[in-house]
Length: 216
Image (cartoon, rainbow, N blue to C red):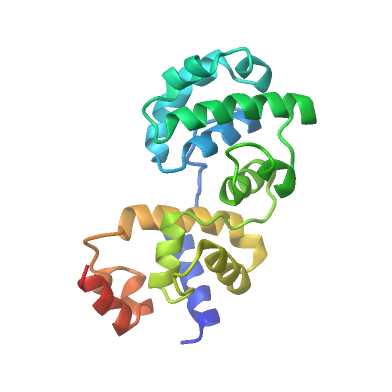
């Protein structure tokens, strides 16, 4: 099966599985989404959603966040991975939003990625989920599944992003990246996964890939 045909069938199946794709991170404005996505690195969305209410009740905006000390921010987010670094980044990011952008989250990749703690993936999530700009943020689920499904070769997240953008229509990128994440969490875990019984891996994975996974 050609990759383009495989991609079309995968997209159709995921649309059946997940016709609705709510944003996984709880937030009430663009700033809160940016902070939540920054915190989600090496941490589950569930954990982020557990710690953000306390933080956002104190500081729902950049103007309020800069009035908090780094220590107060850290105390609220201590349960997430890399919390000390993230607390510093959240505080400095808030300062820069005020200094550079009048307290408004910018709507370009470059301006977002110029903020501390904001990499390409974080910027992509914000661009897609806050502003509706077509993006294909690659997290660990998407990187893993793209390789299992034979849509990319599991080298770098940059290559995975290029490969997926090349085979899926731009108008479905934003929804599809969430659908793949949801599928990965529910049906396609990193370890202990039987590819031969998976709704998608069972017909997309090569025999070589199945053999490799069985050895893990």
